[in-house]
Amino acid sequence: STMQWEPVMGLSSGAAPTATFPNCHLLKPMPAQKAWSAPQPGSPLAELRKAVQEEDWERNYEQGLTKMNMRAEWSASEERVSTFRWLAFSNSARRVLEIGSFCGAGALALAEAMPADGEVRSLELDPFVVEFGRRFQLKSLAGKKITTTVGPAMPVLQSLAAEANGRRFKAFDLVVIDADKEGMQSYFDLLWSTPGLLSERAVVCVDMTLFKGQPPTRYVKFGFPHRWHSNSGQAEIDTLRAAVQAHADLRSFEFGGLLVVTRTEAQP
Image (tube, rainbow, N blue to C red; front, side, top):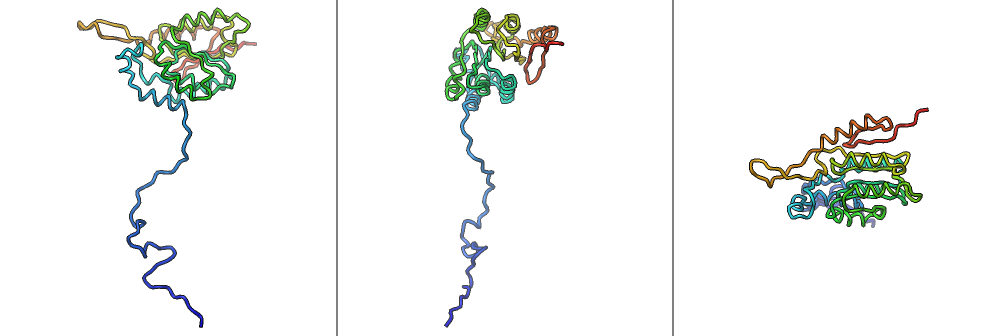
């Protein structure tokens, strides 16, 4: 005889298995799940910027580890990093000079955007921040393009100016001035007045952020001589801006907190 299959009453199959097993966890409401995303490889630059944000800079200054009371906001922001990369790429920069580097986020961003034979020469006053950023630069393949000199900027710039006429000297295609506002004008003038120091297509960027890079000075107020005060640098910024605008051989643009200066195109 032919056996005929008959469904067993009380058991479900197919599309509704939970009806058969009322204690199944599938019956419980599930919490909303975040959209899955593939894991991203670690970025030394992102790690550096994160470490800068998490560091206690006020404590470092109080303990005498840094020369001035630095702030995490001094590190190159994501917007500034993107601007540096664009400037280096669009200008085909192969040699970059950075005056004032802080922890080196800007230098690393520039190095990553440059070709394999690119060079970034950074000048930074404070040895603590140089060592802070160095370990992250060493993690990056582009880190080998960065050379940092610790100490006051002007003696190094004067040494570079003396070498500029030499046959082996390679002119800078891009310069970033992000240091003390008191020295800003002097750095700027030396760059443009020294033949051979800058390439013909050179771009010089000057940070115009108030208070950034300003060393504190002691002042007396209400009988408390131990108080410290920092000059905003507004007067120096205004003076430089006016000088550039009045210079017949230079043209400038200002965006993202940067004054970007190039040579005026030759008129036919």
